[in-house]
Length: 119
Length: 108
Image 1 (cartoon, each protein chain N blue to C red):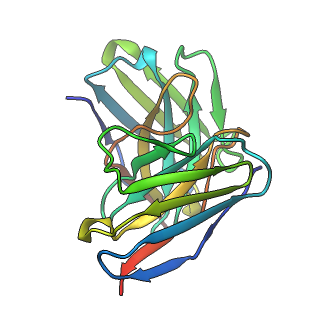
Image 2 (cartoon, rainbow over the protein chains, first blue to last red):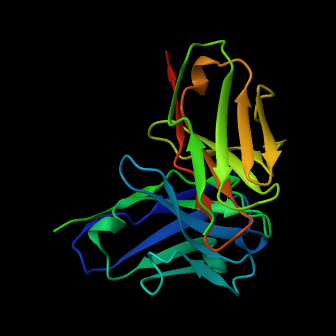
């Protein structure tokens, strides 16, 4: 079954770190670009980060540049989002999403995982 | 950054009616616009890509049109399951990829 399953969301304090995981099944990561998109409570969608299909390039939103890192482990068919120096405004549901290699629309989404940053 | 403005914010219609949703880009994005549907508690679902191509499994009542800066998503006859929030997204000018603020289609 082709799917994405996120995990790792938690309640954390500002300034701390969190690592989200996205396990892919039914397809191989090396054939697709992978992204993280977030949605703050009651708000719209915000693109966060992207990893090129061959794993050679990463792109980030200005709001997370220098704090978040997207990576993958091909052997585990899993994508990660390492989130450092977390802020209250990073509170959101984080979705993992797949794009065709060079056509960046999201054709498969996970169900999301909630990261809540609160003191 | 390419800003996408969706209108209206809320659309109140009855089942069977036609829904017309708009997405306007702050600069030309050619045909590179996608539409997504999101229901409460669920992830978004791809409906339309490259302005007018229906994604796999999407009913024919959903159609997209437009190019450049003005785009439209049309639902020809609303079914009960179509009441949801709809987002547009551009992939022409990135990073960043950007989304519109959403249009909520609610039951009148």
